Amino acid sequence: MEEATFGAGCFWGVEETFRQVPGVADTAVGYMGGTTEDPSYREVCGGGTGHAEVVHLAYDPARVTYDELLDVFWGCHDPTTKDRQGPDVGSQYRSVIFFHSPEQEAAARASKERQDAAGRFRRPIVTAIEPAGPFWRAEEYHQRYLEKRGAAACRLPGS
Image 1 (cartoon, rainbow, N blue to C red):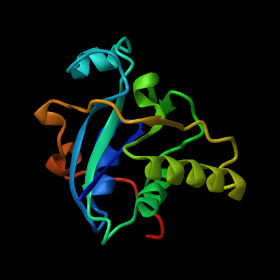
Image 2 (cartoon, rainbow, N blue to C red; image 1 turned 135 degrees about the vertical axis):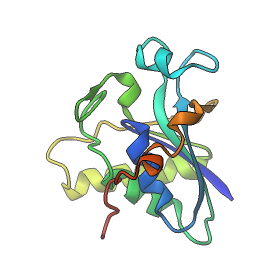
Image 3 (cartoon, one colour; image 1 turned 45 degrees about the horizontal axis):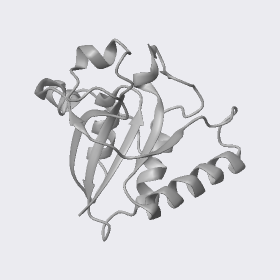
């Protein structure tokens, strides 16, 4: 198994989207990229910790590639809005790829360049690409939130 971490706005829908991807073995929602140790949801939403809401994945690279996960990431949010996804505003909702290896960093940068060059989005992509730091798991009631409520996630690319 390998790991990947993405921030694409509110983590509930992003988690549910990645859970549908064959080869993704496990997901957890939480926080990464900030300065406070073991922050709470309330602290992160307050905007003072510097964390992004993220989905941390364990995936089988024999079943799904990192590039395929990047395609899901680009397809499930608007990577052209800084610190915002829909009605959610604040740096905790930023578009960010946290890489866990030099290979992931290179793949993320190349994928971002391809997306920009393809003109898929009307505005430039503002997604940050940063080294992964500590992952702080969100409170249990956030885990698989939409699944527990029977709500839908984003559509997967090509579906």
